[in-house]
Length: 297
Ligand SMILES: [Zn+2]
Ligand SMILES: [Zn+2]
Image (tube, rainbow, N blue to C red):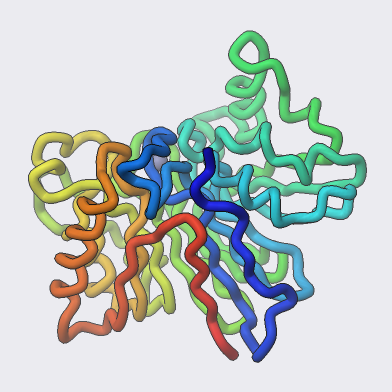
């Protein structure tokens, strides 16, 4: 059951909207759709960035990718780019179910961190192959090209992309995407200091600095973080701290814990909203499947 059918964004949009950020998967760690979390959704990380007339950029390939695929052409004309943070399951499991790239002529370029001496392509070939899964990436009929992308600056699709390492478990990228006058920072999985302090890596501050929108890991309450300080994530309070320190305009809480009900996420959002009072952060949302944040020209 998918409680969140494909998003009906008018396309091409009317009235000068030039960048849409749409969330198709907002959950961390594992898919977990259930009656208790139907409003926010149970699919894992996948966020689409779309500008009319240009090839889209998708952030991560979690299970939400399947639903984004339902909005894309399935006639072999699909062309797009993925900026992948890392290869944990919750960020890659949607790829075999992305129908638009299973068509002759379709093209998907996947950029992500190299894997400690191995290429990103090698890592994908290991995780998507029999006996673990019957389909290899190369079995899909379109062309999927993997590109190693470590810290640096790059022109990708029509965007200017800054790439920096983010503290997590294993090689992990964060991205700052400047596209058509809008800046979006994406820090999906972020290990906060395990001692509970609020120090932030310089690399992360660089990505977030003054962004129009920061999409940030907000998996735990402070009490949960104390119990799971070494699990690779952070508290909602830490996400708010990063947003305020970096002077971002809007914060989207992301990578919700699979055990959190809608009411729990609501409560975390309410706390985050009161915590940004008086700062640069004008708005905080808790990302949910189907949410589109539009930037007007
Ligand atoms: Zn994750
Ligand atoms: Zn991860």
